[in-house]
Length: 127
Ligand code: AMP
Image (cartoon, rainbow, N blue to C red; front, top):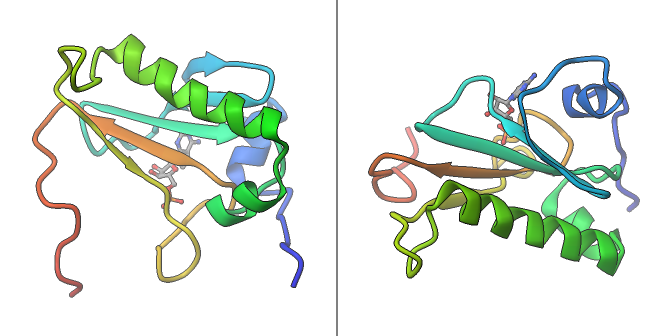
């Protein structure tokens, strides 16, 4: 089954410049900006500029150039925030929600970078 991308999703609108964003990094294939409702002192969203819905969509259909650009962008942000463990940083968590079970709100692939406080265990038992 082909992936269906909704061009009206909020991140598509950000990429078209229709909605402002608090940019952290802007490269040829990747945009990173601060989350509008941060769940930690640092909460950055990293998105590819291409039309991908989820991580699995990006992983299977993005070009190697896009994938490298995206991955290096995450690394650059970790370095710039000074959060990389082994480099004196406190650490961080990456989260990418996908689909219904993952409770994905915005259907454009994005990686959350969270840090700046103890984040607790990865998952709590579902309610
Ligand atoms: P997810 O539940 O993984 O799809 O996460 C979507 C994230 O997008 C949430 O953390 C929202 O706070 C964030 N978000 C929604 N609209 C905006 C916006 N206009 N600018 C920045 N972040 C946003």
